[in-house]
Length: 136
Image 1 (cartoon, rainbow, N blue to C red):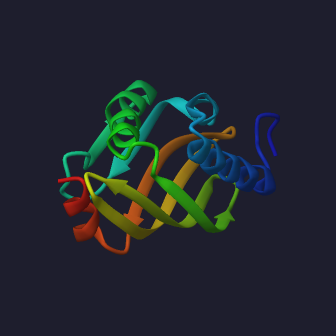
Image 2 (cartoon, helix red, strand yellow):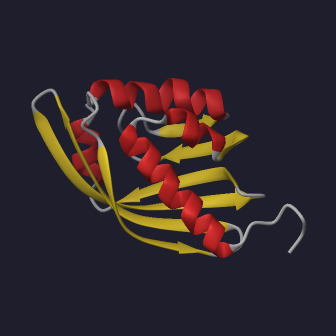
């Protein structure tokens, strides 16, 4: 391992802490886990579906409005975290409420890592139609 390399167990722990921080509203802790030039892919057809470029784009145009619109109800139940030296896959269920609607969807969240920081992120859900309708 190079001096800046991070172990698989450290990658798992960082992913776990990231989800815990999100559920507690600690966005600074999440920011510390990301590379400044992160690319954040959101699939689907909702207005949030696009590729976000850089940490300010991710936080300003994805996290902030999603958190605001769900009024702090968006929570993640992590089921498992799988990892290698440069990838983490988080299997989770996400629940939220928005404008009288409720949603519960499962995700596979794939993260590419370099030197312990997330450089690229992809989300895949089991029900893209429900997610799109929720944020419509």
